[in-house]
Image 1 (cartoon, rainbow, N blue to C red):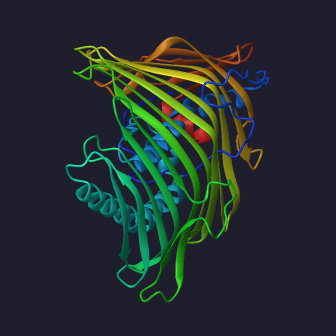
Image 2 (tube, rainbow, N blue to C red):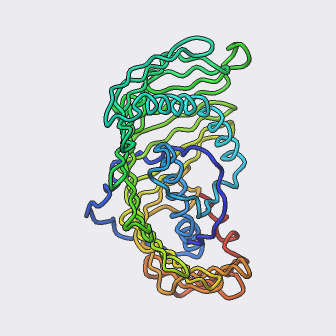
Image 3 (spheres, rainbow, N blue to C red):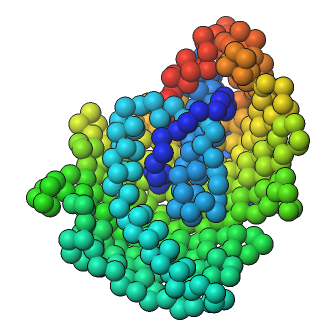
Length: 400
């Protein structure tokens, strides 16, 4: 829950969350009962996991929002410990490189479609582009040049260029009315990863050997709007379902979103701002490399977080709700349902770049106290407390 601002890697999101038990955005399904926390080790693990849960959700939402071309502008303001894992960084860098060419093709096709529709309210668009080495990209749909709205089906037929082969279908609809909204399907949308889904394969020079492959079957939707002409308040939403697989450079990552939903309201106050997030649904990922298989699954039940900037060189954060954690292997961290209750907002100072105040209770008997010197004390009722040098030291007990 240390929502300190930092730059996360500029990459596409890893799709996560294959648990069908996740509630849909806005679904009133109640969370499971809190898991008993009986030891100091369990208390530390639960506190570390809860501390990072929102950062994981927001980083996923930010990168998935990138598919919309900016309609869903979740910003990477909150850190995730995963970004500090070298394996995580290597995967993200490779994935970003792999997706650069098909994203450029999509952007180029959209520019041409809008140019074709110039000065017409709505125009049909049908074009086939030939790729540099072999294969084609076929665009079909309609574009409204007056509003900026469009609906396109883009079919990559083994489009080969820059030693990459892209194959599969992307269906994208953008509505640019008072409420900007988007709907995107990458792959066939049946929820099962198959070779016929959207696939990008990278080769060594001359298409000699495969280096890495990304396969996607994702369905995304969302919206964004300004509350008034001055845009002093904005609202955003994102919903994601589907799966993804990445294989290359000695490891394999698989994951999916299941009813993952996030909404956001940001209001500017003149001297600062207040932002509120609500998260529901499931998010997980599993990585296999030569050291074994490891992963995490997070299911959010009405997690509500806020950040208030009063213009006084600090921000106050709160987070309330339930998150269920499931780890692979099971003993990687303490698993269970953790109900998070912020009793005193967590204050992060931009003078010292430390947390300096705050109190959070987990499952009713574990207390996290953010001290004025940047340390964090975790205490479980009836046992001696443990103090960590800083938030990062606590998070490394169970790094997500």
